[in-house]
Image (tube, rainbow, N blue to C red):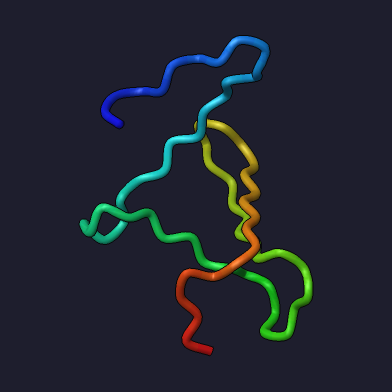
Length: 65
C-alpha cells in the first residue's frame, strides 16, 4: 500500500502516524507492563500533536525475556 488509506464509510477513520524508528521499515512498540502481566501487551505515551495514546496487542513478535 502506498499513500494514505482511503476513508471507509461508516467508520471513524481517525489516524495515528507511527514512524520507522530504526530505519528498518518497522515501527517498534515496547510493552511497558510488568514481566508477569496477564493482560494484553500495552504501550502508553503522550504526543503533543494528538494527546494520550494507548496501543494494545495480544502476541509478541519478539520477546527475549
